[in-house]
Length: 94
Image (cartoon, rainbow, N blue to C red; front, side):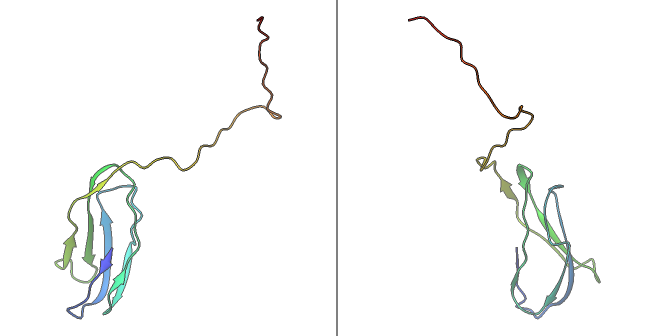
C-alpha cells in the first residue's frame, strides 16, 4: 500500500480490510512523506483495504477491488509417519 502525502497530510490512519485474514498495518503514523505501508491479503476473491484517520473518521479512503488468486504450493510437509520410514514391496514373478 502506498501512502501519498502530496497534500501535506500528517496524522494517524487505521487500516482495515474486507479480508478477515489480511495482514494490514493496523495503525500507521504519516509524517508528510510518501511511504509504502506493508500488507498482504490471503482470502481468495475480491477484497478491499480501507484507511481511516483516527482523529477524524470523515477522512477515509478505500482501495479499488483487489482480486486475490490462489498461488502454487511452495512446499509440502508430511507428518505422522513411523520413524525410520521403511517401505516393503511385494515380490512379483516374471
